[in-house]
Length: 154
Image (cartoon, rainbow, N blue to C red; front, side, top):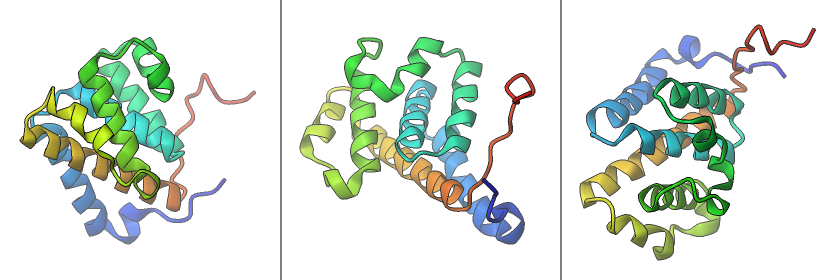
């Protein structure tokens, strides 16, 4: 697979705008990092974004999340490793990432109310929206992740 183009070079202002929104959501809203990691990992898996999955796994590990917690995101419904608040975030992430199919049902939204304020829910929703923007840009433009030297085929 080859990259189609480098957005940082051909549309740097656009790239910076999306990056600024991402930085704001991650650093300024006060969302706990574990929720941000769940959002970014699950949406990137659903959207088939290898670049983002690779990056967000490394970020989650770097911030101290366990391998089991990271590795089971794709099968979160079948794993007891996630608490109720995390499961609410995962369900909302799935619903919004698959919006055309789910239409953001009440069953996915209502569990958030038990764990988060309205402002937190708004920030979680924007965090989900932002990673979906990144996934669409990265998959659409075929942005390639780096290959670690220990992983490269001999």
